[in-house]
Length: 253
Image 1: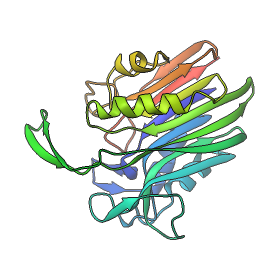
Image 2 (image 1 turned 135 degrees about the vertical axis):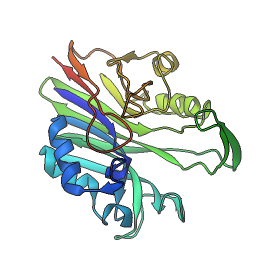
Image 3 (image 1 turned 180 degrees about the horizontal axis):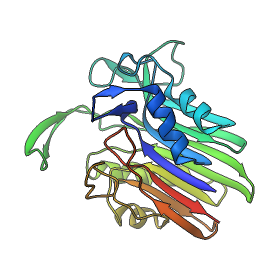
């Protein structure tokens, strides 16, 4: 069983600044994941040719179950509002997606609050101050019927603001307490090791530099395990022809 997480940058390639749906589908096929967690996913956005990127990925990987969860409705970086899950058909949306080649017994959405005010934030990389209008975040939870039994899989994309992402992770961990184990949390947590494992007490299944895509120097994307699952037989952090992140894969059993 292969698990994979990939922040897809809404399908855009920094090399040519374009979203090519066929290129995105080919990248998903290359990952060959049985369960795939995607972040920064567009649906109905002009910048990604109004495509439903979750549906494109589902067809490419042969998923039998998939779910897109919008974090915002509207256009990132322009006019948007927090998504509620009750948006009108045809609304431009942006969020996360979870896809599975195995049947899914149940789905649930957890909404994670953003910082409720604008604030200045110093970015040491570009050495500048930005004013942050934090986007809301979400997690999607699926109980997947794998060949070895039920597996709870969670996908999320946490805040890039230090400290707040840890608060979101602790809140998510509390909300997942009642879900059956084993449980795997995947996604762009915007934290480097060993912080996610230390905050949760869960086991990191893969170490791999995932950001930036060229010459990566840090791991922002993670696969964490609560409980027992089986031996990890392989991991990888492949560079694909889109996104500013590398994907992260874990082979189990």
